[in-house]
Image (tube, rainbow, N blue to C red; front, side, top):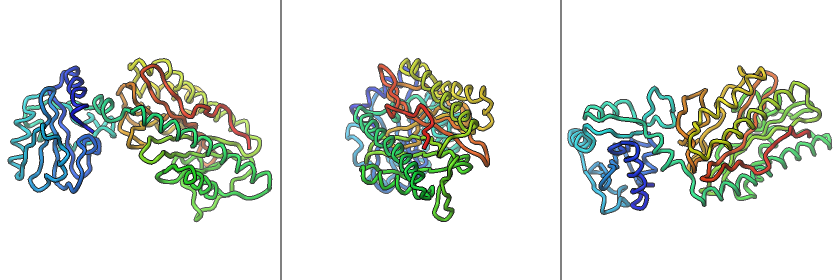
Length: 391
């Protein structure tokens, strides 16, 4: 959230980028970046703008019937109240006309998580003579970075999530040793109960998928489609959770029920080595602030392609994890689904999760999280998976 304390840093970044200001826009939640950054509370059904100039006080552009949600806008900052479209457009023209400004816009929709401003609003702004450039680096620096407290919360959650995953694998092994049938959805429910006991929260439920079901990256186990986990199959567990109001931990673990096939081992090793290539690149260059999210995707994808499975790696290597969202608005690890050219600046977190999905046969994914610090990179969990777990 923009505050008087954070304003000088934002304005220095605007000056360094050669920008006259940052124009934030939201309408009924279309731009969660803007709504969180402005920090409005209450009913909002009209268009919202906030102008952050590189010098001087910010200006809130407020509809006449919705001034209440702006109650926390600092008194020293300015307010422009409008009711008609004529007044709104004249106000925007006066604030940004002929200026070089940043907005949540991505040319060609290259980065959908950044592309939040409707084309019509861009038309309105450009009609003033303003030049609009993407706000990507500003979003990274002032919306996506973690605080020290948020990092600490993530570290705690990541170790719990890892232990739950390992214990879930042990639960499967125990069932196999007893000769008891265990269904995918039953193991999923077991994980959810463990999260509750640990005081962690989640949205959606974990993915527990075996054999051909794991070839669907977003598979959902269900008691309506019960599937027993059988000998000779690979078992994929993808689980995510956080402390209340904390930063998400998101991991995927792989097990083999009984001795895995040679083919399963080859796929696992390709995915693991791709993950490790991405980790190595992030460790080498991440803290320097010169590494793009897309570069890391390329490094991981190259390994899987060289092993002959490139056509079966059908998603990006990783997603942003910002302080608010599991799939956040910071830089993604992606040069496949989108053209992510934003830099991995100190303070950002993200997943690294390459995968190979052979339809009707098996799926393998290995996922860790990374945090780029000022002095180095932290990978979570601390003891992440190196070998396929044989159950």
